[in-house]
Length: 298
Image (tube, rainbow, N blue to C red; front, top):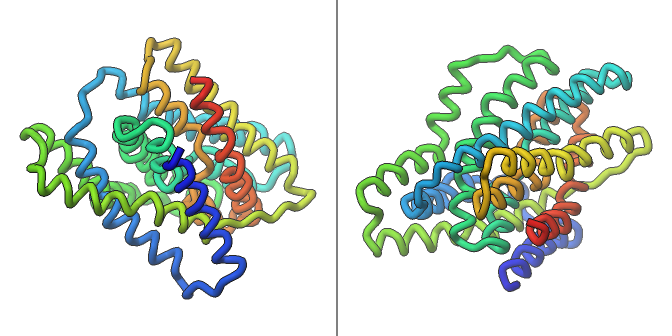
């Protein structure tokens, strides 16, 4: 319960500071830098060596790709029939197919499923969702915003991303028997800064702008991201014999709110950014209810 209270408090504080205080310019971006480049790699380095091998770990990666590919197929088929612009289709593919599996996923999984669940959440995020962002996100901008797809750039982004390097380092450390206790304590304390700072940053960037012309697209985007996709992931797990904590974490990560970076991509390439930010904001609010409810059902 205390972990969930911390999650809600940090998110609410970020929203309140943005609305009623005068935070320094670029505060959210500076916090994001620490989370992505320091706290997250430390957390990955600390948790990965302690994960026990499970033949069902493939499911954590598969759910992230099912989420993304399903989003692309759904909105690429629906969009032209509904008269949507290419920008709207691209925006919905991004926010519907990429989940906030780190900034919101890590704190919520830790609150709901503890440290063991958090370790599995790292695999879903780093091996599944981050690669989907790096490869699929670039591909979507190439198709729907006219950006040239550069495979070398995609590969470089993946291989040099700090938490991916930490993932490799953690696997090596685990194979060698894990970290000495003093190193583990340092990594654990640095990684502990991720939860409050990540949720505070999400609150700082929270936006919700509803327009009547967006309601249909908003409903379809949220319907896929928050309900249909997690259900499909659960059905995939049941059909393939996945169970226990791996099944639960895979489905919960699929059920997270849309990724902030997905909305940023939509804004950078002018793919209806107002709709993308609306889906993001509404998804954050919904996930505070739907993810704990999904956890109870699982």
